[in-house]
Length: 279
Ligand SMILES: [Cu+2]
Image (cartoon, protein in one colour):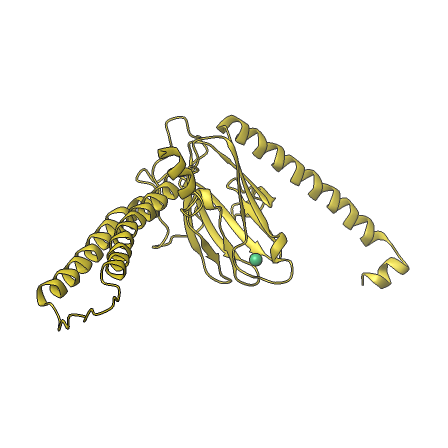
């Protein structure tokens, strides 16, 4: 019975299980929902009882009641108390949703100072200041991820990937969410809340995944005709697997850049039609 209830509730409650912030959002949602269920059952139960018990019958005259001060004060105060308790609970739980926690003991050692290129008052870091910072760039119609490890001091030459973000487990990952063109919305439901990618503006969130696996999402705001295909995947692997992936990705990007350099040099040497087309 308990399992039946919890599996039915899973359809209407936020997805969780991927990251602590998503779990906190889910538990806050459930607390509010349980209170709402109790209120709903009490109100609808009283209504149905009154409908049946006091239904019209031949020869019956309805009692004319003009207010009941005690009852009215009672339900007003009760509703106010519920609102205050829910608000207090929400504010008490908010820091655990917004503030990143430290990486686990077996997290990735590459998690540094967040890979910051600039300071920000709005960005939150874990208490020990160490996070793996990934830039999430929305563009029509694909997500790009830029990882720490720039080869140039100005931040250029950093490894990147498209559509699928690869991250180490047990490691606090902070995200810088930006957009190149229109407003997009970053959302991997199992990894926490939804965040808009707005041109010219940075939004921040975080997650920490304990289990290796694939976590799926999808751009959550209509951004143009290709919106439906703008998927996002986060693949969590162990820290050694992450580091191996990152260096392979760096090599592939370096090889592709070298090839492009040769192709550009060839184009530059061409005379005739090539020059007309690429003056
Ligand atoms: Cu979209």
